[in-house]
Length: 184
Length: 423
Image 1 (cartoon, rainbow over the protein chains, first blue to last red):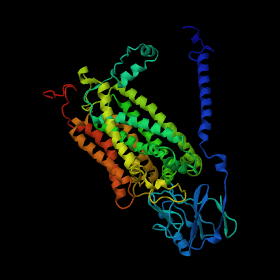
Image 2 (cartoon, helix red, strand yellow):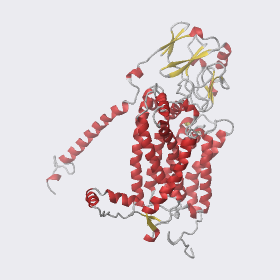
Image 3 (tube, each protein chain N blue to C red):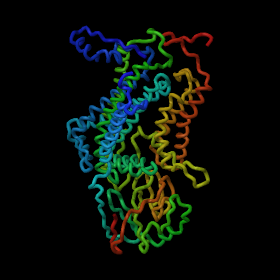
Image 4 (cartoon, rainbow over the protein chains, first blue to last red):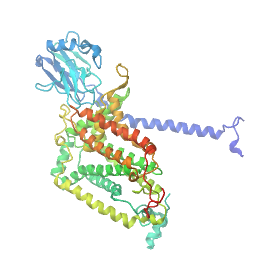
């Protein structure tokens, strides 16, 4: 064998050439990985999409027992003015029997229990459940019904029957006054 | 391995080129006079070349459509309507593209089931088979994204449902969905990237098709008897015999294609996609295109979690299990060369197998029908039965059957299809 196999420090095996191979390949690999990242991250929501737009809603126009849909971040938000019966129905449920165990109190603001605010996207595969407008099918539990794959939500927006795994999510919101709601 | 025969063109210019780039030899060896091919291929062997022709039609009509289409949520729907009403022959080219997708899938489904019956996935053709599955998966992705582009109600809600499938993945699911959307819902960024990828993927498919044909050249064509070629008496040149046969098949196939194109161009589509996309209103029922229905039926059939019965312990949530089952229903094909333990390739000599295969074909039609129904009444129950049979065929029946079944005696050779005595 010739000079190729001569080692730097006299030990067998690791040559200067081996070291250069490993160092160059390793650094090249790290560089390639770093170059790939921008091409993946460009797919994530852009800055203008991320700019958290907030939406203000005038609640005075929503009568008892009525509900409205508003758009927030491209998603429908359901705002429901619940009747006393509907609140009672939502509170009398045995939480232990629910698929996604949440009490009604966890899903509304204290003192504003009549207002239920949820994201109107079925947690199964993203359809918009019906039941917000008058005359629409509210499902077996008086809340919402998803026509795509038959999920039933109750008057607290919790999943009660069907394939959806989770309750309708509650977005971040605050009451600016008794009649003004800010989402986001 | 098939022999490679060098072309020796008589024309001087052709010979000059051949010496520098042996492209005439390449064609001759793959679909030409120098391609010895089993002499007994039946009409089920037409659908490979038909699928290739459909890919060409889709690329040509698609490139033209892209010249008139606008990938923006505010303009996409109207630009498609403009193609239909104002662009010269735009209606023809768009209907060709939309129905072409369906006919591409028809050709490919027949091609796949031809392979399933005649054991085309068995040694030495495993890689050839797997490349075919890769093509099929790419086709599904391409077709799905193409259906989103007109930005109708089915476009929007189909995209919403299918992208949401990825939210079933634990922990990172939501982030992946947001990455796919480029936002918090299916919106303009989603439409833009789908258009870009819808333009790209057909060329990727074309690349894998070249690998598919290359693998076919290396392992040779299979044949309806499923026995190896023994001598040149078993073979005939691809050209002119199969070029002519393929051309005749293409004429028949395109006549049916033309009947749809000119007399019922919307028969295979959904009327709701002529309503512009409306993010606040979900259509009464979301139905995928017909070629996705069997897999959609499998997705919906799994509405129960994987866990320990009568306890709250759940290993895999229902939603994730359904998504896994749907992907597994295609990925299981990759394992087929090893799941089918029978030494005999062709279903012609497997009397029991033929029955199970016939049930699989019926099962696929049942799943297609179930996928289009509303999930009410007995439909989910039927879905479970059909899904059970589908997976049983690949994971249970084929492995066991290959070891138990008494197959019929194989003929001596393709040219001499007489069964040897005392066998």
